[in-house]
Image (cartoon, rainbow, N blue to C red; front, side):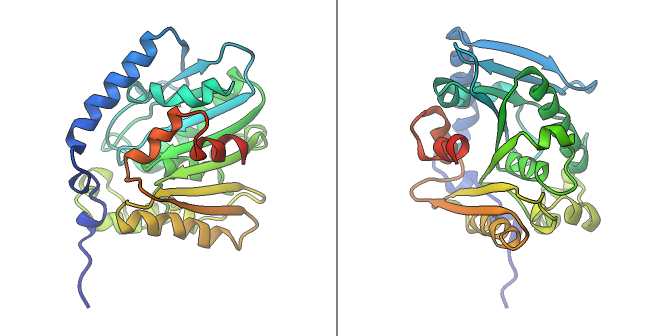
Length: 269
């Protein structure tokens, strides 16, 4: 039996031509969108330096609140890279919250889960109505944890969450222990198991979609299918969507399009 190269299994950039230029492109697109005059409110939800979130509001009273949690293997980026991804939801009349959170190695994954819970609770106080959660990659892990039975969210906030979409999310963290990423993540088996949404009980009645690009690394497709398979028999409403033609990075571009299938899944499911 051939041993699995787990570092290669989770390597996205080497398999996407031109990927090394993407972070600068994201930052530029986000800055341009902020400069366009969109209404942004920055709030603090905790005392740690990175415990801040931006709330973007549509012109009219919002239909509800969409929260987007960014990825980066729990080690990279912050809210400033992703402002432009609010464009589609804003055009559909939804407010959008984009939090930063403390990254590894300064924080463990379990702490990040708690921080994201605090950020969503803070955003929920600022914007009334229904809540939809979306997260990409490591952010997909974090939003999935919000609808587990041991959610870090207050009950009254949980009750407002109508749907959650994990985009290219990581739902079984145990294999990450065998990657170089774990030099910073410091996952042991206990934390990897406790923080794996696919191994947790979902909140009864949770509505969740695992969305992944068809051109992604096979491990990310497995991760999406794992959440759907494990939760479909546990009183959760789950769907797995493999979107053809998209890689790990292009898959989230649809958030800028108010008519995209991905945004329809987040806001209309």
